[in-house]
Length: 261
Length: 261
Image 1 (cartoon, helix red, strand yellow):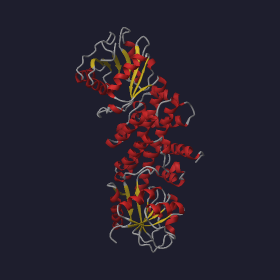
Image 2 (cartoon, chains in turn yellow, orange; image 1 turned 45 degrees about the vertical axis):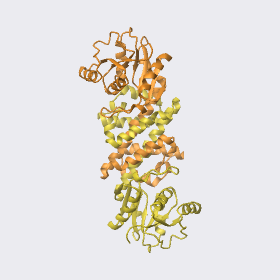
Image 3 (cartoon, one colour; image 1 turned 90 degrees about the horizontal axis):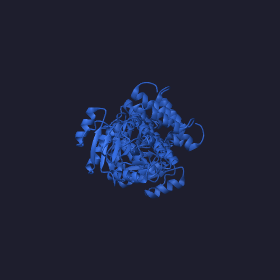
Image 4 (cartoon, one colour; image 1 turned 30 degrees about the vertical axis):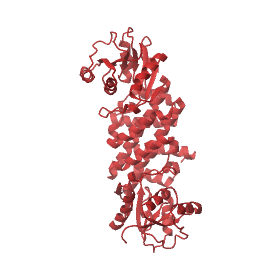
């Protein structure tokens, strides 16, 4: 086989709904859609003009079977696939090792590192794709279809991808929680949340220019005890806010002053 | 007096080095620079072609005296100013109330909400300016010179500004700490930190579109216990990383599932 021209999709959820139409636009044939939720599967199959796969226990006609299912379903679904499948069987998860797919299959990983919203269109060009497979040929095949969508291709081991996924939790989920906190403080003070948007953009843009540790500013990194006191007072005792404030303030302080507050 | 045409700068630090040249470009005359560090003061005075102020105890010829000094010096420096000054005396701090300036002066606040780096040029157009003063006339005067630089003018009380400053610590310093953590995890795994840049930009851009609480994704918000377990294992027991991971994960989980992990 030279390259991947036909893809079957297992799991018609959010990731599949973004990926399948993008592949179709690149001239890839979507040879089948499988989903336990018949309604979801039908909707995606219409969107990409592809038949429904009735029985995933039979060999599937495709060069790549893409498992776009939830992390804890990957092993279970992959177990159901026939060992007679010729296709690469790749999952799309950041957190799950390639070994979750049984080794009698031609296994791989095809992980787009992005936070997918149901309603927001993805600009694929900037999405990093993390590829793993057992042979160089399969790495190249997966890399080639990733390159149809993006210029950012990374070949990572399962171990590396696990660290990357955790790093993404800090950079995305936890940073977003910080933005949530700030919006709640503003709402309570009767200030429109848009006031912080330029600062949030600036914070993100700085990380692109230099390491985050070089951009740190604020009362904790300056060791400005008076301002920290005032903040703690404002947060009030016993709130989760304050526990988190104290812990993160201490961490920044330690990194910049090397002693206890 | 109609409007502010002459500004004196007290404190030739980072904020002054950004603000004074920007005002000069707008045709404002910088009538004097005062700094306890003679070298810093001289450098800024040359930059904006302004004389050095020798004695800040004497009345200063200006429409606005801008105190660009550190938070804990504002009260002390303002005390030294002559009560005969006709100018508005405004500080540039987010955390300090207007009342830190003695009430025999015509006091005000002129707070640009941005994270100033020594080496990065500010795009003023998007910087929110937070204004406070005791008379409507002075609010208008301060607002007018802010409008020379930016389209985002907010009139906030000292109480509101205090909440805003705390919110900015979450949105900037703490979010940046999350980026630091993620870079350290990547470095340890031998992955280039640029892999997370598209996700970081996407995270920030989403906050501009909708409330952060509506953008939350990831294992904690999904209640994906297996992935959380794997992350905790990777972080190892007893690390600060892990304590922070647990606390933030619990917080996101609570917000989305309303029960204990």
